[in-house]
Length: 258
Image (cartoon, rainbow, N blue to C red; front, side, top):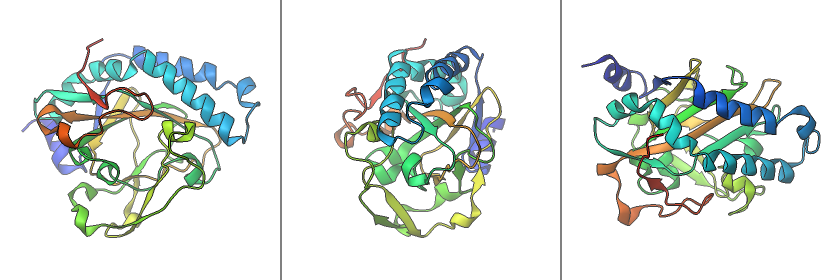
């Protein structure tokens, strides 16, 4: 068994995949830094609608430049091992997460979840989460160790409708939920740990790992990008999310190596 697979099996399915170079990360950071400069932020310091409209526009820019393909290309060897050397599909549209400091989590981030809460096929998905700017131990993504082994039927959920995020809105298109689900029981959320990703790496982990709750207790906006991949053999087209709501593109697509 190689070192990568030991990490997958023995450490909450989390692996830190090192980018082959920093070109793609630096390009994304440059776009984010330019688009969220202090001068631009003054026009919507606490304005929810204009802020998320701007965030969606920047997310669209990143997706036009096909950064999902570029990130996957840079960590391809690790991903290929994670899906057991099978061919895999990639999500067509990445999310740009930009969580402002000291704002209620329901307004800026997603609470505790696993991907199967929100769609078919997602129980077989793998998350790729990449810190971009200002990610620290005080605002990073959190996870529950070993929670990927908890069966869905052992987790009790409470459904609700968001007062802030409407279906199809800019908030929804940047990944915030119009019908979030809250974990009521079955998971000990007190056991959470911060996901501290080394510089120049992406975190790769099972879609079944309970994660979220990335409230920003630091002083700057926290930026990250994320998307999902799925082994081609596990993709059930008849049950699939056919199109990605934020882009209108097919949800999962073949990889074009950049």
